[in-house]
Image (cartoon, rainbow, N blue to C red; front, side, top):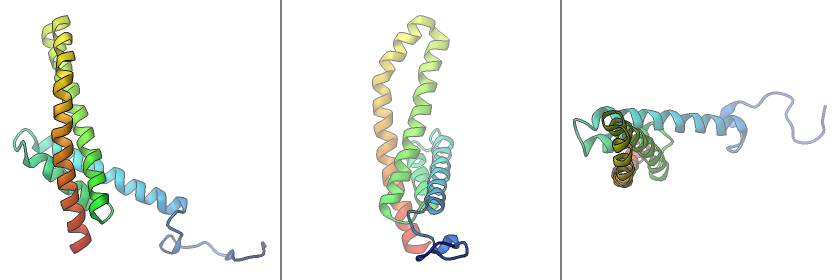
Length: 140
């Protein structure tokens, strides 16, 4: 038995130090799951609601993540970056599939559009994430 302040029994997760690996892994798991949920909502709703899809995805990501506006914004931005990457890959692959080499060149031009898509999803995802984080902090 070691001397000092070490208890002879395991510490429950609820009483663990906030920087312990158990708590950090749990927080990371919540962050990843909430970001994937927000990403899914963005991708599903964006074709039908171009502005509302990313905002609702950010709200979902912010609400299911850790409480707080900043945590919601982090979840919203990660969801938005994932969604914009998927949309940009689909645009470039679609151009290359239909037009071959010319499509690949057009896909390079679409790279500029990808930046706009990234900004579009990111700004709306951050707004939605902040709303979702604030809702969870207030009501959750």
